Image (tube, rainbow, N blue to C red; front, side, top):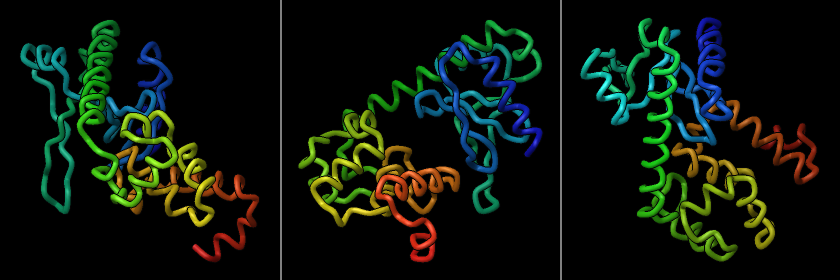
Length: 209
C-alpha cells in the first residue's frame, strides 16, 4: 500500500494541470478524481487511464495493458489502460491522454444525468425522489451539483426524522455506490460531519450505530 501511495503522489503531481486531483480507496487500490469524476486508477503501483477516443488511438499504435479486476475470483477487464514506462517519460502526451480520459468520464456522466431519474440511482426510491423534488432537487444533475451534505440539509429542514442513513444513501447515489459499499473514509467523514452539524454526542451516536 505504501508503494501505491507513492504512485498516487507522483500521479497527482504529474497531472496537476487537470485540476484538483483527489484520491479514494477502491478495488484494493485508489481512484483518482477531479471534482468527483473518476478518470484513472492506481493498482499495484501502476497508473491506469480511463479509455477515451485519444487513448484508443494511442493504444492502436502502442498496445497498453488493460486493468483486470478479480471479482469473486473471476477476472473482469475494466475500461482502463496502464501507463507504461514510455508514456511516463512523455509528460506532454501523458497529460493530453489524461485530459482526454477526464473529458470522456465527464461526458458520460453528463449524458447519464440527462436520461436518469433520481429514483434510478443507487439507494434512492420513488419516495425519496418525491422528497427531493419537494425541496427543489428535481434532477440527477442538480443532486450532483448540490452534493450529499447540502441535499441532506434541505431534506432535514422539512423532515426532522431524516438521519445518517439518508446522508449515506445520498452520497452513494451520487458516487454510484450502494450505501453499505461506501469507502470507510467517506463514511467516517460523513459521520463526523453529521455529528457536528446536529451537535450530537459522538460516543452516544457510535453506540447506537
